[in-house]
Length: 539
Image 1 (spheres, rainbow, N blue to C red):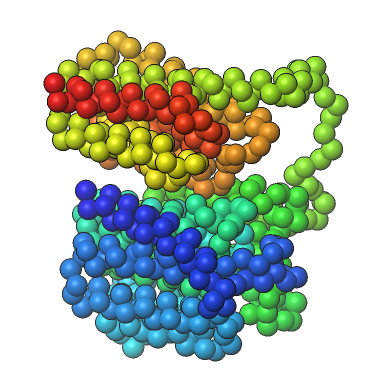
Image 2 (tube, one colour):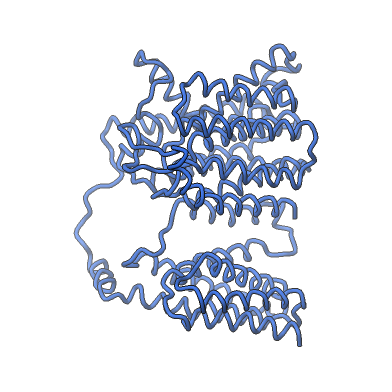
């Protein structure tokens, strides 16, 4: 449970700190202004990194022992926070920025013994007079690699999130609780920030955030490979941090080839090339997520293979990615071409959309269908524990107060609905043996709700809900992790539960964004669900 608590606490702190920090950004001058090298066209606050670092530090203070290594880690975070805020405010000279990075790295290298001693193809560990300078160079390098790759909304956060999740999973397999807690805290902070950062972003993480993510990824992957799981190949970090490293090397090589400084700014990063090929913002980020998934998945598949094989796989993946870019640019390939003439089916869909039926019908189906599922799930168990009933009573009172006195649906009201969904899925899945013959019917019902949600979002005229790359990332992680071999033997059907929760969460958010009446059928259904839990729990 510590893993879950670390994730949730970090997520909540990061998410809640962003709005007040946005208001504070103009006062401290942390505003990102558009220029020729950037893809945004208006001034954006760049204070998300502050929220992320604070979100990670709190779980560390709560759930990890404050020994020398963790104090060194907290000190490094503080250094990055100080220099990051200074940089986001004043656009520091690269030498001062570099000084802050080196100082943060020195603290963990000397204070927490985060040192790369086991190297590929070498049987003996490196002596410290070689290992320590190499580690400093490598950690500063990956810190800057993430910093340089942060060019699109959700890009640096999403790619590093995949890396942290895989580091956590390998650490979990190796039985190292502290590493998993750290990874889950960072993952939670990223998720909390990304909800505000996905395109079109309200806030940027700034150099504070990108340097923090790069530094954290580098440190934790060194801890994983050098301390936690020394049986794995020391080349695995190359795959875990695959795409940012490839992007940095490719860009610097091109600059050197063009006889420019390797640190000179340009638009040759992978995300710039994807935009040049006609991908829109969402599509470019999704493509990069998929490529990073391939790198990270290869790391897991090749965990204990030979150094030579892993190097070969990394080289082949990198060569394939760069070659495809090169061919696409040379042949003037573009992802979007002129559309063909509309078919009768497409014309029919357009007509239905013009009538509003493709939005109204799915919305009504969700407003009625979700409460019916909640009530059914609450009726399934033979008994309901009193502590759950007490929680439902508190939620019911809060929900009624929010409905009566708030003019619009607030985040607090949404939070109550999400908790009700969790309770309903928990009650249903813990009692599924009573109605095992109806499992297929329940799953079909959830698929219908999912289709209704998809149709509503696709044909909504007001765009009150918009799918982002983060949402695809959440779906990927939540559906993939519970079905890994280590989880598939669990008594609790995590995969089914995750699917139901995803459908319910997104469907509820889509519905609540269009709720306007105090006595809306959806609100009445949620209230009835909570009241039913209370009655069944206390009677």
